[in-house]
Length: 502
Image (cartoon, rainbow, N blue to C red; front, top):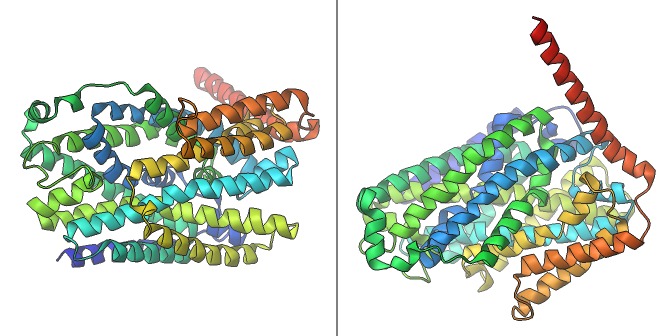
């Protein structure tokens, strides 16, 4: 019955992807339709798709395990959802505007055009791909862990890795961006239902309103906020400030049908994301320390609290829960896989050929790269690296994402950042982050914070002594933003006057 429920879920996902594929946009180039949904994604679909991208195994598995191991301090990470909402307006609308005006498909195209730097485009693409790999990897491995845990090993971890890799690759190749967006929306709703249902179930078996009192009898230290200011700052910066600039999110901004759609998504994001990612994992993760809630749970297996919980109490419901976990994994990895493939097709192959391939060839290359990247994720998933705790692995990706921020800020807000500063800041900052990861005792900073600090310092120093971006390039971007927002304000003022007169 467990296998039948999971098969029905995957079958339903294929059906949704098929319908969205049939009703996809007909305007625009083949590559734009495949990679950006024809730039026609509306408010509701964009909100659900963007939210589902964040509702990953990081939330359904990794966050629960972190609460179980570390306690309530981890709840502070959800501040990032408010940051992210602000950044959608501060950065996302400008990315959408420039992408629509100049036809960009990848972040690196926009960065190259603004700075007139092919080498910077290459570095942005490489860092972007490597930033997405750890985040994609935990979706594959987390889903495989959940399947193995639910079936008590009848479906082993390696088989789960293979199944997830093959299915994700199939959905992306078959349906493209619009298909993944619709499947994301479906899976986001399923994810939310699973989270709420699981929370209610845990509440009922762990003492109800006395849940935290019961937990305090077993592990009172988990209910004390121990601070961890450096780790909290690391989470806020990496997930909040770095996540918006990751390639798959950047391309979601490109895909929006209008700035108004992005504005509405901004307003709804904190309500859709924060409480779902804070309160529910907190309740379940802390409840798991109470004897009898999750029998046999250990620190080593704490990233699989949900499947273990339902495998013990109600295996039939456990299949639905694992379907929700698969939904969280697939809804995150599919857009990231598509984005990574587009970076390779446009920014690596395109740079070495001296010009962008034709739209048809881009689509073909992207499909091939999807297969290759999926194979790489499969191999990594079967190694010891892939079996680590989910949150630390994902933190590598979000930390690398921070390295893209200074160069992006130059194109979006800060005129003073130069090509030399952006390029060498990113290169040296990335090297510093890797060094701090390999040698954590060098300085009392996390790899993400240390790498960003070095990046920002190098960018600021070099930008003060190297040639500025050309006035023509500055006007093409910052003049475009200024004109657009001025017109928007004028239109709003006119509307207010007409309403007052009426």
